[in-house]
Amino acid sequence: MIDSILLVDDEDLFHLVFEDSCSLLDITLSLKSLNSADEAVKLFADWQKDPTNRPECVFVDLNIIGSSFDGIELIRKINFEYGNHVVIGIISSSNEPEEQAKAVQAGAQFWIIKSDEIEPRLEEFKKDYDGFKNRTQPFKVYK
Amino acid sequence: MIIDKNTKKELIELLKTKNIGLEGNIVKLINPDGDEEFAAYLKQCSEKDVATRRKRLEMTKQVQTQNAELTKLNGENQRMMDELQNTLTSMEEQKNQIESQNGELLAWKQENEKIGAELVEAMKQSEQARLIAENAKNEAENNLDMMQKRTQFELINNIVRVALYVIIGVGCITTGIYVYSMTIGMDTDIIGSTWSNMFGILLTNSFSIVGTILGVKYGTSPNKEEK
Image (tube, rainbow over all chains, first blue to last red; front, top):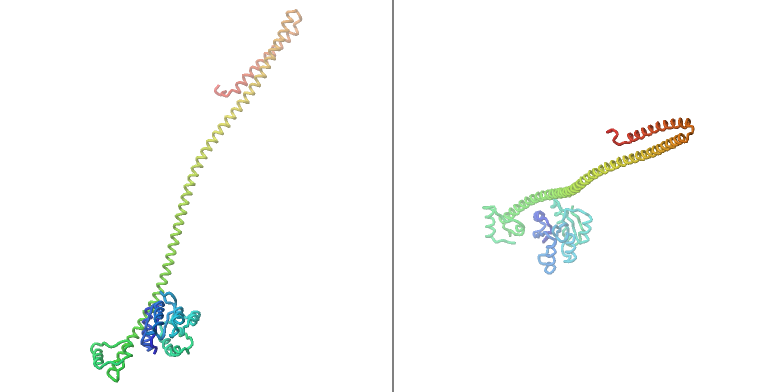
C-alpha cells in the first residue's frame, strides 16, 4: 500500500472517483486532492523546507484548467526544483505519444489513461509501484 | 489502532440499534485485538463502506459521463451561439451596408432629379433659343427677300427711267427736227411720217413701260392680297 498520494486535477468529480477507487483497491489510506498546479507547487516549496506530510506518490492531470502551467511543467518543477523524492506521473484522458515523450523528459514515471474503467489500471499500477519507488520500473503507459 | 472494550461495546450497540457504523479508511486501521465480536463488527463496517463506496463510485462515474456529455453539448451550444452571433453581426453589417447604399442611392436619385429638372429647363431654354433663332432666320430671310425685291425694283426703275429718258429724248429730238423742218420750209413728208411712226411707237412703248412698272409694283407689293 502506498503511504500517501497527492492528486492534482481540476475536476472535482475525478477526485471522488480516484478516492473511491484507491479505497476499494487498497492503494492508499492517505489521499490529498488539489485543484491547481500553483497550489501544488506552493506545497512542494514548503515540503522542501520541512518534508513532514510530503506525499510518497503524485498523480498529475495533463491539462489543469485554471493553473499557471500544465501537468508536465508541474512534474518538471517538482523533479528539478523541489527535489526528486516522489513517485510522479500523469493521469490524463489524452494518449498522445508526443506529450508522453515530453512527460518522460520532465521526469514522469508513468502515464495512466483516465477513463470510466480506471480501476484495472490503478490495480496494475499498484503492482508496479515498488518498481517505481526504487526506480527500477521504466516509464509505463497504462491503457 | 486499538480501541478499549467499552467503546467497542458502544460501537457494536450503535450498529445493532441504529445501524450506525464506522466508515472510511479508519476501519482499515483499527485492530480488533482478538475480539471476535468486534472483528465481525469491523468486517461488517468494512463491507458496508465498500458497498457505499462502490455505489458512490458508480454514481460519480455516471455523473462524470453525463457531465462530459453536458460539457460537449455546452461546447456545441457555445459553438452554435458563436455562429449565430457571427451571423447576426454579419447581417447587421450587411444591413448597415444596405442602409448606407440606400442613402447613396437616395442621394443619387435626388441628384438625378435635380439634373433632370435642369435638363428640362435647359431643353425649354434651348427650345426658346431655337424659336428665337428660327424667327431670326425667318426675319433674315424676309429681309433678304425684301432686299432682293428692292434691288430688283430699283434696277427695273432705273431701266424704265433710262428708257423713258431715251423715249422722251428721241421724241423731243424728232419733234424738234420736225418743227425746225416746217419752220424753214423744208420737205416734211419723210420727217412727218417718220415723226408719226416714231411717236406711235414711242407712245406704244411708253404705255408698255408704264404697264410694266405698274405690274412690277403690284407683283412686288408685300400686301398685294389685301389690295
